[in-house]
Length: 303
Ligand SMILES: [Zn+2]
Image (tube, rainbow, N blue to C red; front, side):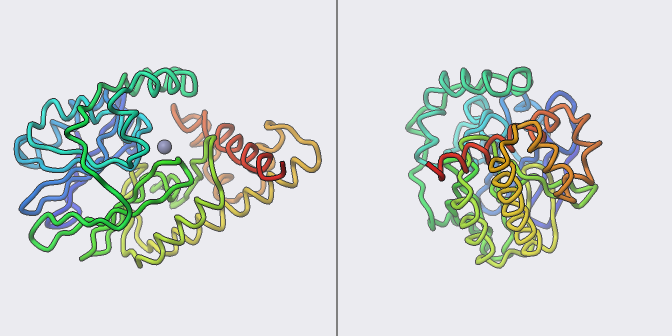
């Protein structure tokens, strides 16, 4: 179980689903109150609990669990985790909350879309609705010791999505709103499965840039310095994908051939194509699902 002390109040826990390192991170903020950002999937809750123990946090001392959105790899573990944290309340976008109170549909759909990967993440357990906080864009949660988390609504990747900004240090937790960061290559790849909304995703990135972040703490995965450069880079990448996909559709291309175009024309994707091709989770996405998200978005716009 790898944990990393980022600064005096912030820790990363590598959740390692099925032993897969450097893929899903959970962040722990320790003020007078303790908050966890991202639970990760249900299957890695035991790893998260081990990580908390290693950092020296008692389960009863955790006040806040904040998730970016309810996709299994970000919030699927919320219900299971909360059974271990008697005093914690959950922050989730109001449109995501019903899916955690009643996770059956979330689980059925996730299995259809993700197949074996959903099994690897595990079935989400319900969260009782009384434990969910009212949350909306712009609200701040004071954790004491000058640590203050602001909720930023950042839709586009999903129709319910929050990012979080620690206002004092301007450390930003973008969830899936800033792509997937492959630290070892310094490369960002989009995470844009259907129903992806490009214009909304671009304005969400602008919103994050306006916070003047100093550091990004990616769920997938880890720390990225030069935060504003990363956000601008990802924004340009989404625009590039939109151009490639629109051209492809005009020429009557298929998902398969447009995916090949993306791999040739986006230098970031090209640089990591071998790594991605053998990655147990990313191999299903960057090749197809994320391109499909763009195709469906562009077809809908042209109707
Ligand atoms: Zn997601």
